[in-house]
Amino acid sequence: MEKNKEFRHYLIGFVLATVLTIIPFTLVATVGGKITFFVLILCAILQLIVHLRFFLHLAFKGQQREDLQLVLFTGLILLIMVGGSIWVLGDIYNRM
Amino acid sequence: MSSSTRQSLHPGLNLGEEHGDDHLEAETSVFGFWVFMMSDLVTFGMFFAVFATTMPLPCCPGPKELFDLGSVAWQTAFLLASSLTSGMAILTLKQEHAAQGACTKKLVFWLLVTVLLGCGFLYREISDFISMAAAGGPPTRSGYLSALWSLVGLHGLHVTGGLIWCLVIVAGILVRGVDLRWKLTLLRWAVFWHFLDVVWIAIFSFIFLGGLL
Image (cartoon, rainbow over all chains, first blue to last red; front, side, top):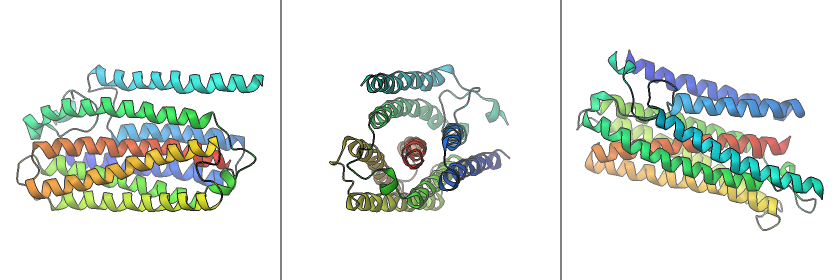
């Protein structure tokens, strides 16, 4: 039972990831425009969660807290450094 | 049943309690590898930041002339499929190699399929690089192109490294069998390989699809 469950877990992840890949590719190839851009971002974030959950097996429960803190802290660093760079340079660009 | 309720010490991939002491050993060493992986993620993040602050210049060909949507779709498919097959390898390791001396055929099979898919990815990526250079978009042409080549190239280098690593593991388990050392190496490699697919999601979404919008 346990073995089948783990196998199914990978399969569910693969199917979800495939769907979340096909949607943005099809939209960019056919529709385009601003709404597509938002769908693109949404699909990317959802697929990121699918990969972390089903392939890398990260979960909110059943684990000690330090690992979650590691991932969240890296997220914070990225937010400050990447978001900050884009913000500062975007601001300078607008002043030119 | 008890294994589903037990507390796992560290995130993600593990061996399971059937592996005894190896399981405990894996929990800490894989966590250590996660720390490295997260710092690597920051590196990728900074390359993304550089890319996001550059833009295609009118002098040179832009995304519409340089990117091939079909080829990017193929690369995505290769990488996603290889993520699944590497998962199958880890599942085989977890379920069939608790005792030493188990048959390694299935494990080696999944690892080699993963290598093949990874080579398919690299083949498409390199031919894209060649056609981009031919279409007047070599990395030296503009800041935007430098950022593009270094970010996608950095990911490609990681994939190349991952493939070599995988072949070393295959050789290792064929020679020495699936002992503790190779179990831990396999888990670390699997974290690395899944992680590369995660980075690829960001690359195809924001650079290729976002560029073509």
